[in-house]
Image 1: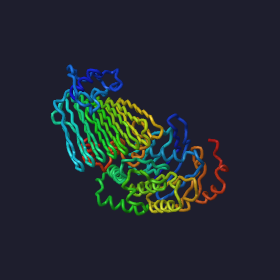
Image 2: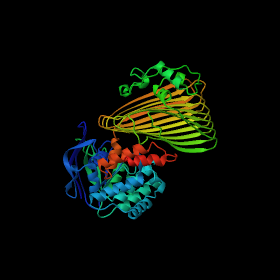
Image 3: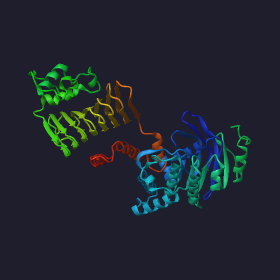
Image 4: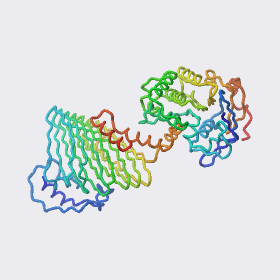
Length: 250
Length: 332
């Protein structure tokens, strides 16, 4: 489904950040990427989504065998890539509900479908809102406007629930969450986990992985994946940290 | 009054680029104005003409055929539309105690290339005035509009200004907060294109303690347009607990330009006065966020422009619907 092959990417000033990332995510799989600060985890999500602050120097990213690096940001999203931001920004004045509807209509236009009807949209919105236990008053504000950190993360998963992506890249979705918010966000992610969708979780802590069990865990260090394993690897990383893992030669 | 204004004009002369109040304005675009010899006048100077330094405040009094006077009686509410677009026009509104004025000031169907207009508003105790001013010139037009607003104790004035079009405009607003708890709320949005120019001069005089003022101006400038914002706040001696803020945000595109000058003169220690100014293009992270949800760049910019324009105005003012209706017509 998603195939990242020898991906190298750099900042605008050519400072290399990703130095040959390889990752294969099949439909239905949940992968977790862990690693020390500055390893390139957030960069990987931004490069995949097409953030203009980075440029790919070599490699390819295939979604269902199509190289998405040729697509612009919106086309990648409409093709099925969803990034849950580590720090979702506030956009005052852009109504949350209108924004969600525009995003969904953009995707439908990309798929050659008509705009969604009022009743269908309300149904989808209502289901997503209930799943994330979000009050209507949040949705009637500007995008993330005045939201707490936890509410912003819930809003990200709500967007995922509405847009139904093929691949969801969730960048530190657990950071800043209290226990209840972590439970709600995890419940949302698990509800959206299905046989057609791939999910990539970026996290520093094992606690998210206690709620959302990954099929694979990878360690990203100095811009490349240096170790992969099953869910037991999280226990080992929690106990021993990252220093014991080889891969500093990059 | 007319002679007082003519006398004062003869004294200060016509605007020139050397005059700081007109430094951003292309004075060469003003039509030539002959000032007739003034006749001695014994009229009382209730409008501060003898000390006036702004020629745009004097032209309408000196040359308007006759002033338009309105008094709103105590506890009454007056809703009106003002279309005083003779070449020179002067209107004076006196809003008595506990009365309310909702006034829309807009252009007439007959467009003139040169207009110089003055609007005086006098708010007595506990009175309120909600103003919606729409400036919309044409390619070759030059419009000068001057507001002089005096605000008594517990009175409030709300100014919502929409500066549009293609011509050159100069809007000057002078507000005197003369009584305790007097309040001025000024919001303006300039949406300019095609080498249009909009010049704004604000002077808010805090002449009493515990007075509040806020200025919130936004500009969306494209196609070589130009705007200037000269925002003055004067916190006078013996006037404690004054609160004043000034924020100017600008989005520039296509070689458009902006000049912003905060002008704060504070003569008392116990005051809170702030000012800020941002200028640039679209916020890259906001654009990225919208695009990352599948909204293509052109539409994302349209969404951000719309929110930039609409956010400045409050939903609960008497003119909110009219303002948002105007913005919708303009595609915002």
